[in-house]
Length: 291
Image (cartoon, rainbow, N blue to C red):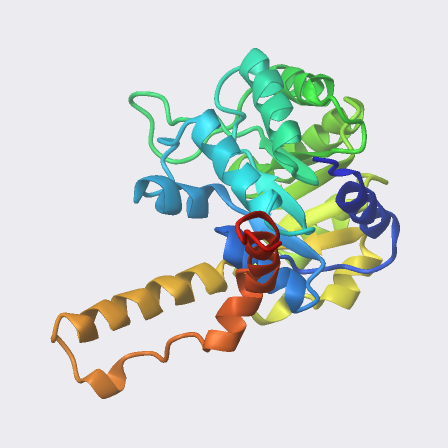
């Protein structure tokens, strides 16, 4: 398949002056929902993938091939620009190169590679970061791994809340030199840190984990002025889908009042999302002896 148009649209977004909040995507139908509702960007998070693929928490237990397969099923279902959180790239710099190449072929518009030391080493507690030199190697490998130069590579760091402002600043400047297309900053101790760190690069920014700022968290227009083009604000659609499924199962199993069960999707909307008319036309052409 040709993924060029969605990648060009995403690059146009990064070059523009707005900040967009992507919608969580977790299967082909959720991608089509976002597309049909006019959403510009979908976000495939590593934590969501871990739950959807393995039913596990976000502890680096899924494999790169499982994640790539999931991304491909989502990308081929809708003409949607999807960002994927590829975590640590599933290994060292050589693994990152391989992971990016596979995810490039899966049709994503953008991939984030982070500098967190994952999976957590034996005998440690809490998050830690790779040495900058090793992380720089990973970012260079990610850029090298893409076959399509239009695929966006975002270097991701949580240094602001793990190792502090100065180290985060150093990492931003080091990653900027690797050829990545943007920087992803996750977590922010204060608005002052946000302003300072955003000013450290001319590359487009993706931000996440800003809920720690509470009522001081800027809106998207203010973030756009800081150079942010993407702002992550949680994975509510997936969590809501899990809650609705659980409540529906309780009803089916007679564990709650049927009146408390969530409504099912309307038949017309389901036909729209499954592209029923397209399949109906194909069946008429290829299976009907009179076609």
